[in-house]
Image (cartoon, rainbow, N blue to C red):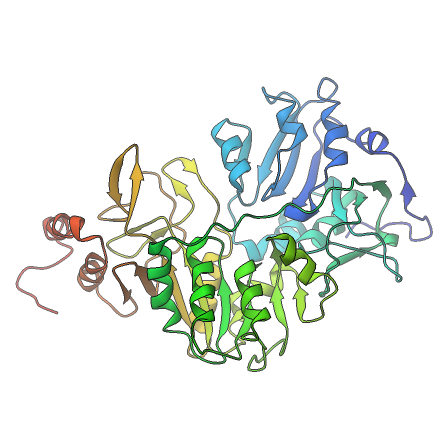
Amino acid sequence: MIKRNAAAPAKPISAAQAASLVKSGDWLDYGTSLCQPDVFDKALALRVDELANVKIRSCLSMKPRAIIEGDAEGRAFHLFSWHFSGYDRKKHDAGRTHYMPLNLGEVPDYYRRFLAPVDVVIFKCCPADENGYFNFSASNLWHSAAMERAKIVIVEVVENNPYVYGTGNAVHMSEVDYIIEGDAQLPTELPNPPPTEIDRAVARQIAAEINDGDCLQIGIGGMPNAVCLSLLESGVKNLGVHTEMMTDGILALYKDGRVTGSKKQINTGKIVYTFGLGSRDFYNSLDRNHDFECWPVDYTNPPNIIMQNDNVISINNTTQIDLQGQAASETDGHRHISGTGGQLQFVRGAYASKNGKSFICLSSTYDKKGERKSRIVLDLTKANIVTTPRSDVMYVVTEFGMVNLKGKSVAERALALISIAHPDFREELERQAYEHRMIPRGVTF
């Protein structure tokens, strides 16, 4: 930890003065989603002709970053992301954003053990409360760890982010060097498109496996959130939540009285998460609501903590799975799409939980340049990254069914996955499996 002079109060400065503290070659940290700065970002972008090789760590950029938009050739600024949003993905395709591999729950440890001190940390925060703490809002993650390792700490104060309770979800003014005034923008909403019929078909199967008192982790995407809608149509009650991402789907279950947390073994009665994105109503519902607790990601995501709750249900998307059960959830060949996030940690944590279950869900097909392709394949696309190894995958769900791969041989896995592939691809997949001796001839299961 870098020691600060607690006797020296945080100094109010302008965004331009804050940006002037950045030097060529510096590492900066912009944080995640709701914590990413805006007025500082714009002020720094104005120095594009003065700086070179400034590297900025970030995660889930929810709006365009001025430093990237104003530096098309990448001479001054380079963005390094722990997890891609749609914007980050587009900028990666243009060579302006770069991915950092991880297990999301380990990132605070990366800052404390493996990364050099950050030159400047600049996070958007709520105004100081009565105890002198600047709240991170619905975005805790590794922000405290990054600030501990920073040479200069700046907070960009905004009025409109929700004030969110949770352990370690703030920085005290004695640990801050400079304060700048933010703008009046409302927090960026994450659109929630209505679920497709395929989403609903997958969700109904998973919802049927969820019982009273189970503890949910819901990943990002249409299918996991469709599970929440299916649960609203069921009679399930007394659900708990210990998750990475807080979503509108979980909020709907809470508002309907389905989530009480009364059966949880840790954080009983509380909805625990590390970051949240959603609608305007979502942010208003989190604001100063004691039922919700935003914790650092090294509390929400490690399997040894997840497993302390019984009956953990982990629900996550993938984009491709091979006949042995390897799930590739973050790339399309060399093109990076999203990130590892917490998928693997929650798959492992759910398995280790008493009576826990993990579900990897996907549509059976996708369209590429007008051609329908199977997401269940003999071999993963060349250069695809395995997010969840075959040894960890439990339930796999498509609109055509659900299979459990635990304890199954390669042959049994191949046959099981073929059975939930789109019918138009099953014959070809079975032929490929026999040709490559995945399925031995003369053996029945």
